[in-house]
Length: 213
Ligand code: AMP
Image (cartoon, rainbow, N blue to C red; front, side, top):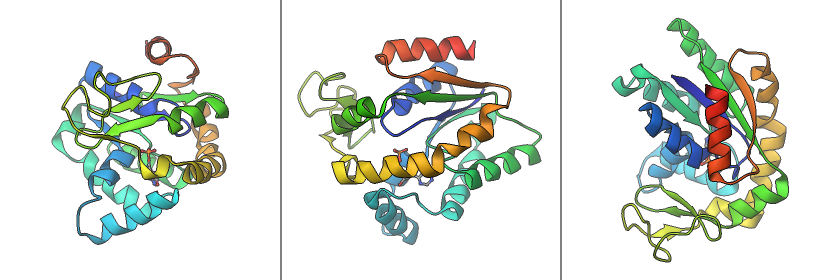
Protein backbone atom coordinates (compact mmCIF):
# COMPACT_ATOMS: atom_id res chain seq x y z
CA UNK A 1 0.00 0.00 0.00
CA UNK A 2 1.51 3.32 -1.10
CA UNK A 3 -0.49 6.33 0.05
CA UNK A 4 -0.06 10.12 -0.08
CA UNK A 5 -2.02 12.40 2.23
CA UNK A 6 -2.29 15.97 0.94
CA UNK A 7 -4.04 18.88 2.62
CA UNK A 8 -3.50 22.18 4.39
CA UNK A 9 -1.57 22.36 7.64
CA UNK A 10 -3.81 21.53 10.60
CA UNK A 11 -6.43 19.59 8.64
CA UNK A 12 -5.66 16.37 10.54
CA UNK A 13 -3.27 14.61 8.15
CA UNK A 14 -0.85 13.65 10.91
CA UNK A 15 -3.52 12.12 13.15
CA UNK A 16 -5.04 10.16 10.28
CA UNK A 17 -1.63 9.16 8.90
CA UNK A 18 -0.57 7.58 12.21
CA UNK A 19 -3.79 5.58 12.27
CA UNK A 20 -3.52 4.34 8.69
CA UNK A 21 0.14 3.46 9.07
CA UNK A 22 -0.70 1.27 12.08
CA UNK A 23 -3.69 -0.28 10.34
CA UNK A 24 -1.80 -1.18 7.16
CA UNK A 25 1.49 -1.81 8.95
CA UNK A 26 3.44 0.55 6.72
CA UNK A 27 5.90 3.30 7.69
CA UNK A 28 4.46 6.76 8.27
CA UNK A 29 6.81 9.13 6.46
CA UNK A 30 6.20 12.64 7.72
CA UNK A 31 8.84 15.00 6.38
CA UNK A 32 7.84 17.55 9.05
CA UNK A 33 8.46 14.95 11.81
CA UNK A 34 11.76 13.97 10.18
CA UNK A 35 12.94 17.58 10.16
CA UNK A 36 11.74 18.19 13.72
CA UNK A 37 13.63 15.09 14.89
CA UNK A 38 16.83 16.78 13.65
CA UNK A 39 16.30 19.99 15.61
CA UNK A 40 18.81 19.15 18.32
CA UNK A 41 21.43 17.81 15.90
CA UNK A 42 24.48 19.88 15.09
CA UNK A 43 24.43 19.37 11.30
CA UNK A 44 24.13 21.72 8.34
CA UNK A 45 20.85 20.07 7.25
CA UNK A 46 19.36 20.49 10.73
CA UNK A 47 20.31 24.18 10.82
CA UNK A 48 18.85 24.86 7.38
CA UNK A 49 15.67 22.90 8.10
CA UNK A 50 15.09 24.61 11.44
CA UNK A 51 15.59 28.08 9.99
CA UNK A 52 13.10 27.47 7.19
CA UNK A 53 10.54 25.75 9.41
CA UNK A 54 10.58 28.47 12.05
CA UNK A 55 9.94 31.05 9.33
CA UNK A 56 7.02 28.96 8.05
CA UNK A 57 8.79 28.35 4.73
CA UNK A 58 9.44 25.13 2.87
CA UNK A 59 12.81 23.46 3.33
CA UNK A 60 14.66 23.53 -0.06
CA UNK A 61 13.54 20.80 -2.47
CA UNK A 62 16.97 19.27 -3.10
CA UNK A 63 17.45 18.58 0.63
CA UNK A 64 13.88 17.36 1.13
CA UNK A 65 13.88 15.08 -1.91
CA UNK A 66 17.26 13.57 -0.99
CA UNK A 67 16.04 12.85 2.55
CA UNK A 68 12.85 11.20 1.25
CA UNK A 69 14.57 9.10 -1.42
CA UNK A 70 17.03 7.86 1.20
CA UNK A 71 14.12 6.98 3.51
CA UNK A 72 12.33 5.08 0.75
CA UNK A 73 15.34 2.84 0.33
CA UNK A 74 15.18 1.56 3.89
CA UNK A 75 13.95 -2.04 4.14
CA UNK A 76 10.65 -1.25 5.91
CA UNK A 77 9.51 0.88 2.93
CA UNK A 78 9.56 -2.18 0.66
CA UNK A 79 6.09 -3.20 1.86
CA UNK A 80 4.61 0.26 1.22
CA UNK A 81 4.54 3.66 2.90
CA UNK A 82 2.34 6.58 3.74
CA UNK A 83 3.46 10.15 3.01
CA UNK A 84 2.22 12.94 5.23
CA UNK A 85 3.43 16.40 4.21
CA UNK A 86 5.26 15.22 1.10
CA UNK A 87 5.19 16.06 -1.77
CA UNK A 88 4.52 19.72 -1.08
CA UNK A 89 5.05 21.22 -4.52
CA UNK A 90 5.30 20.17 -8.15
CA UNK A 91 9.08 19.71 -8.07
CA UNK A 92 8.73 17.22 -5.20
CA UNK A 93 5.78 15.44 -6.85
CA UNK A 94 7.84 14.94 -10.00
CA UNK A 95 10.90 13.77 -8.05
CA UNK A 96 8.74 11.17 -6.31
CA UNK A 97 7.16 10.04 -9.58
CA UNK A 98 10.62 9.69 -11.18
CA UNK A 99 11.88 7.62 -8.28
CA UNK A 100 8.83 5.34 -8.29
CA UNK A 101 8.72 4.89 -12.05
CA UNK A 102 12.40 3.89 -12.02
CA UNK A 103 11.33 1.13 -9.62
CA UNK A 104 8.35 0.25 -11.84
CA UNK A 105 5.90 1.45 -9.19
CA UNK A 106 3.08 3.99 -8.81
CA UNK A 107 1.10 5.34 -5.88
CA UNK A 108 -2.06 3.41 -4.89
CA UNK A 109 -3.97 6.27 -3.29
CA UNK A 110 -3.66 10.05 -3.13
CA UNK A 111 -6.03 11.32 -0.46
CA UNK A 112 -6.70 15.03 -0.40
CA UNK A 113 -8.20 16.13 2.94
CA UNK A 114 -9.57 19.65 3.13
CA UNK A 115 -11.53 21.89 5.51
CA UNK A 116 -12.44 25.57 5.92
CA UNK A 117 -9.67 27.99 6.73
CA UNK A 118 -11.32 29.10 10.03
CA UNK A 119 -11.48 25.52 11.24
CA UNK A 120 -7.89 24.82 10.23
CA UNK A 121 -6.64 27.95 11.98
CA UNK A 122 -8.46 26.95 15.18
CA UNK A 123 -7.08 23.41 15.01
CA UNK A 124 -3.52 24.68 14.59
CA UNK A 125 -3.84 27.24 17.40
CA UNK A 126 -4.94 24.50 19.84
CA UNK A 127 -2.52 21.81 18.66
CA UNK A 128 -0.03 20.43 21.17
CA UNK A 129 2.64 17.88 20.29
CA UNK A 130 4.60 15.43 22.43
CA UNK A 131 8.26 16.37 22.53
CA UNK A 132 9.28 12.72 22.87
CA UNK A 133 7.04 10.68 20.55
CA UNK A 134 5.37 13.30 18.33
CA UNK A 135 1.80 12.30 19.32
CA UNK A 136 -0.63 15.10 18.51
CA UNK A 137 -3.26 16.54 20.90
CA UNK A 138 -5.66 19.47 20.90
CA UNK A 139 -6.57 21.68 23.84
CA UNK A 140 -10.31 21.21 23.11
CA UNK A 141 -10.79 18.24 20.77
CA UNK A 142 -8.18 15.75 21.90
CA UNK A 143 -7.13 16.46 25.44
CA UNK A 144 -4.52 14.32 27.16
CA UNK A 145 -5.60 12.58 30.38
CA UNK A 146 -3.16 14.72 32.36
CA UNK A 147 -2.74 18.32 31.29
CA UNK A 148 0.53 18.86 29.40
CA UNK A 149 1.56 15.19 29.53
CA UNK A 150 1.48 12.65 26.67
CA UNK A 151 -0.88 9.69 27.30
CA UNK A 152 1.37 7.34 25.37
CA UNK A 153 4.87 8.05 26.69
CA UNK A 154 4.44 10.65 29.47
CA UNK A 155 6.51 13.10 27.39
CA UNK A 156 6.01 16.86 27.67
CA UNK A 157 3.43 18.46 25.35
CA UNK A 158 4.43 21.71 23.68
CA UNK A 159 3.17 24.12 21.03
CA UNK A 160 5.26 24.04 17.85
CA UNK A 161 6.93 27.38 17.20
CA UNK A 162 5.59 27.30 13.63
CA UNK A 163 2.04 26.80 14.99
CA UNK A 164 2.08 30.33 16.40
CA UNK A 165 -0.10 32.87 14.66
CA UNK A 166 2.27 34.87 12.43
CA UNK A 167 4.00 31.74 11.12
CA UNK A 168 0.70 29.95 10.53
CA UNK A 169 -0.42 32.76 8.24
CA UNK A 170 2.78 32.34 6.22
CA UNK A 171 2.34 28.54 6.07
CA UNK A 172 -1.25 28.82 4.87
CA UNK A 173 -0.18 31.33 2.25
CA UNK A 174 2.54 28.96 0.99
CA UNK A 175 0.08 26.06 1.04
CA UNK A 176 -2.32 28.01 -1.13
CA UNK A 177 0.32 29.20 -3.61
CA UNK A 178 2.71 26.28 -3.81
CA UNK A 179 1.16 23.10 -2.42
CA UNK A 180 -2.47 23.36 -3.57
CA UNK A 181 -1.43 23.21 -7.28
CA UNK A 182 -0.32 19.60 -6.80
CA UNK A 183 -3.99 18.71 -6.40
CA UNK A 184 -4.39 19.41 -10.12
CA UNK A 185 -1.32 17.29 -10.76
CA UNK A 186 -2.82 14.27 -8.98
CA UNK A 187 -6.53 14.88 -9.65
CA UNK A 188 -6.70 12.84 -12.82
CA UNK A 189 -4.58 9.97 -11.56
CA UNK A 190 -6.14 6.73 -10.47
CA UNK A 191 -6.57 6.51 -6.70
CA UNK A 192 -7.18 10.23 -6.14
CA UNK A 193 -9.93 11.03 -3.61
CA UNK A 194 -11.04 14.34 -2.10
CA UNK A 195 -12.17 13.98 1.51
CA UNK A 196 -14.03 16.45 3.69
CA UNK A 197 -11.92 16.86 6.85
CA UNK A 198 -14.29 19.19 8.69
CA UNK A 199 -15.79 16.47 10.89
CA UNK A 200 -14.19 14.99 13.99
CA UNK A 201 -11.29 12.50 13.95
CA UNK A 202 -13.60 9.46 13.71
CA UNK A 203 -15.71 10.92 10.91
CA UNK A 204 -12.66 11.81 8.84
CA UNK A 205 -11.17 8.38 9.43
CA UNK A 206 -14.37 6.73 8.23
CA UNK A 207 -14.35 8.82 5.06
CA UNK A 208 -10.72 7.96 4.43
CA UNK A 209 -11.42 4.25 4.88
CA UNK A 210 -14.41 4.43 2.51
CA UNK A 211 -12.17 6.10 -0.09
CA UNK A 212 -9.42 3.49 0.29
CA UNK A 213 -11.87 0.62 0.02
P1 AMP B 1 4.39 19.66 8.85
O1 AMP B 1 4.77 18.93 10.07
O2 AMP B 1 4.07 18.76 7.70
O3 AMP B 1 3.33 20.70 9.09
O4 AMP B 1 5.69 20.46 8.37
C1 AMP B 1 6.27 21.47 9.18
C2 AMP B 1 7.26 22.27 8.38
O5 AMP B 1 8.32 21.40 7.92
C3 AMP B 1 6.72 22.90 7.10
O6 AMP B 1 6.06 24.13 7.34
C4 AMP B 1 8.00 23.08 6.30
O7 AMP B 1 8.76 24.15 6.80
C5 AMP B 1 8.77 21.78 6.64
N1 AMP B 1 8.42 20.72 5.69
C6 AMP B 1 7.71 19.59 5.95
N2 AMP B 1 7.57 18.84 4.86
C7 AMP B 1 8.17 19.51 3.86
C8 AMP B 1 8.34 19.28 2.47
N3 AMP B 1 7.82 18.19 1.87
N4 AMP B 1 9.04 20.19 1.75
C9 AMP B 1 9.57 21.27 2.33
N5 AMP B 1 9.42 21.58 3.61
C10 AMP B 1 8.73 20.72 4.39
